[in-house]
Length: 233
Image 1 (tube, rainbow, N blue to C red):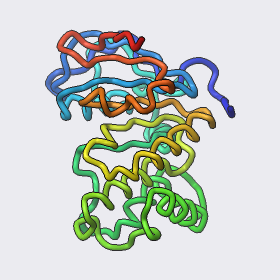
Image 2 (cartoon, rainbow, N blue to C red):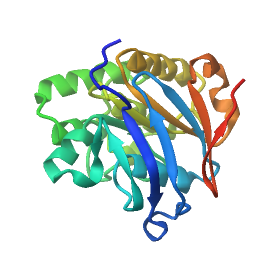
Image 3 (cartoon, rainbow, N blue to C red):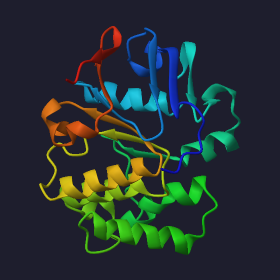
Image 4 (tube, rainbow, N blue to C red):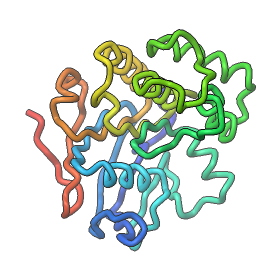
């Protein structure tokens, strides 16, 4: 496993999110995600799941505590540093996140082109390879609104796994997905972990991750009193 981070990839240290900005309970959140770990977080409210992922990405103001990614506190970074770090995060979100005026191929590659200095040809080649891996006939060029819901979900997986992410924030990617997507998703997930990525897999239904149970490192529940550890055995 290729690991360059010493210590946790992501650390929430008694982080109290602003309720006004996020709607999350204003209580201390504490959790660590180490390289290669897969942490399942049960979140029955999709909006809370999205806001929790936002907090992990440094997008939610805190009243107290800290959130660190790769050892760096989001609040202590300049815009250039923040952009560089967010280029190391792959994300699948329930929030509407596809620009309606761009072709899907541009929306898939935009994060890598904006947050990194990778050559465009390299980014496009990776996107095309991942598109085929997730069951698309190639890199989709139609606008997102013209794709089926299943193909848009596949495109979302491509976007999330682009660029060898160090952290994956995944909101229920297998819920209501085509059956054949599960194998490709779990294969990509395992491959990313083998390369040192940490994973937070946010689910509404515990049945979703049972097929990957042996690979789950720990499980938590997002509740009114914050994060509650759940026994998996």
